[in-house]
Image (cartoon, rainbow, N blue to C red; front, side, top):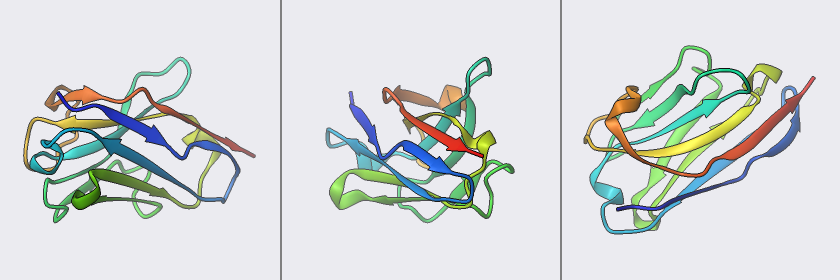
Amino acid sequence: QVQLVESGGGLVQAGGSLRLSCAASGRTFRSYAMGWFRQAPGREREFVAAISWSGGTTEYADSVKGRFTISRYNAKNTVYLQMNGLKPEDTAVYYCAQSSKLSATRTPDDFGSWGQGTQVTVSS
């Protein structure tokens, strides 16, 4: 089973940027779609972005479309989430996850492996 480790979270002012990284172990990384989810205090985990196994297709939540960009570098077993124009409502723990499917998906049940999460805090 793949292991996922997120990094890159932190504290940033509104309007700022962060880039999250998720490093995966194992040889299955390049075979499946990957995704980012987030969970704010007192709220359910929600979909943020997903990318197909090849990187050719992406999906985004409406709340982040145009501000966030998901990408992957299969040769390094890494998926990224570039976050620009951050808002206080983006504050959450961000989780990387590996899907059991090839194509990008926003359904949490399609993801079987999850990282431990990285905290992103956006101050106003």
